[in-house]
Length: 465
Image (tube, rainbow, N blue to C red; front, side, top):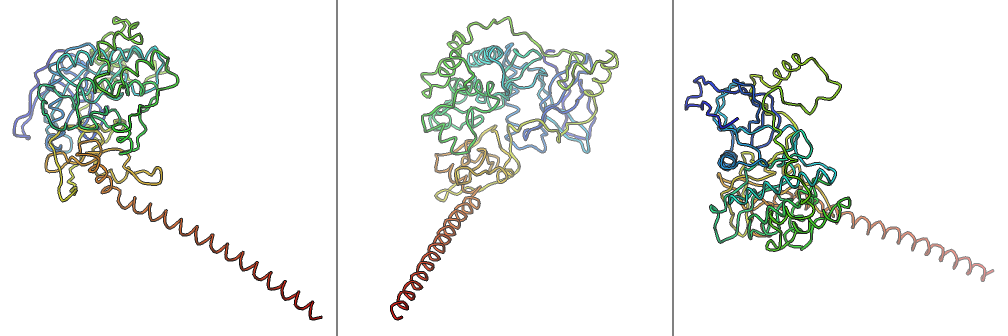
């Protein structure tokens, strides 16, 4: 399906509109909006639709989607999710809403954020490195390479790079001062966390973290909030390599996770590494379903054999409903956006806000609920992003900050009561133990003193008699 010219939405929301596709069920939800199944009215072709409600979203959310549309429109690679078109649609659910939509190929295999065997790992990694090589050759940095942004087709060894909402064109970012980090904190390179530089080398670091994620099924770094960011940016350490990975695979990770970005291998070099050199380029085929009858729901099993005609009608009925975006569906991890919330951050009598686009973990109202205790003190579980007057407040976690002082300050503001409460509880417990020990000690002294008095009394009484 090539680029489709859809009928957009006029300024009047009450006016009726004709679109060439039907929105199906929601397959993903995040603070940025929804991802739904789209079905073409003309030929039944299935595709994915990423949508943002233009009236309800924050400026940064819409900017992120527009950025992804601009970049995907300029890319054409078998290893990058295909751009199929974009439009603005007016849809009526409980009320009429205007949605900005990005149309992409639908890959039913989910994401690669799960443990796999090494043969599949090599093939998927080859796909991601090939995608990054192409993207970097176009002067683009993805900025958010991680398992959830790599999609898998029906065959387990086929994968494509997706989600370019955080991506940037290098020629558009030539500032000499501290950078504004983009991406997901646990996958960020040290130079990004330190606000020194973000370029193709940073994507390679994120690739290394993603390889570990594909092996273990979890992020390369344990999520301990600001402590983890300090470890990545300042400690000089590396994430733990999986024990089940071969020596060749471990050497590949070492080439990706060099702390000095100048020493990291490029994507061209990585494709020549023994870990990937044996992967056949012909093993990766285009697996995106071309029509609704090609779509395979991952919930279907071998025990669901049905008549072909009945099955087709059922699947069309599930996909091609007239309902709007289902904003309550589960199964999608929040990637970008923020709630409508303003937070004042005070540091030396000032606050710092910077313009930005997309950040992970931006549900500001949930910050207080995601504080967890470790090592005797409280910390924010995930670094988060605060928005102030349409800009991003450069003070919280890894979303954007001006030095570690501001990071610590932001965490204090979120969890100050918890931290103080923990300290008070610790002091109270220590005082209780001290007093308890003192009481026991005094009781022992009292018993010894009584025994001594009794002994002396008996001795004196014996001498008198």
